Amino acid sequence: MTVRLEHGQRQFHVMAYRDAIYDDAWAIELAELVDQELGPALVTVLYPSDGICTDPQVLLKDSSLPLPILTSFIDEVAREERRIREEPEPRG
Image (cartoon, rainbow, N blue to C red; front, side):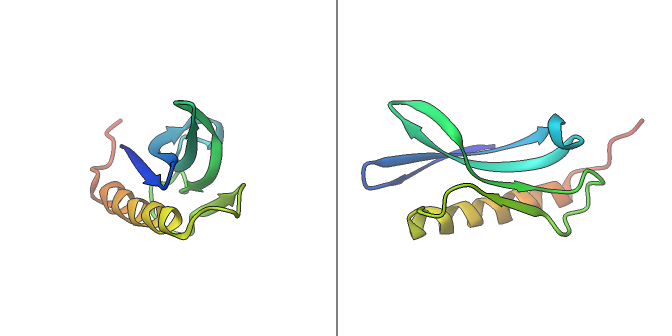
């Protein structure tokens, strides 16, 4: 899942993925686009690798985000969390 958010002249990118660095956990990240280049993550939400959407970790690297962007990001986090919960268990 990728979503582009805009506030004034600023553009942001929301991306959900499996993060191999954090034990293959689900992660959702907000980063700013600058000159059409994706910058480092400003906010990252990490879910436990057991697949249960409880007690996610939130890593905040920039506290100067516009409120509409942060609100939209939280909406996307909630939407992705619902999708993760509905995903069938992997067989193996």
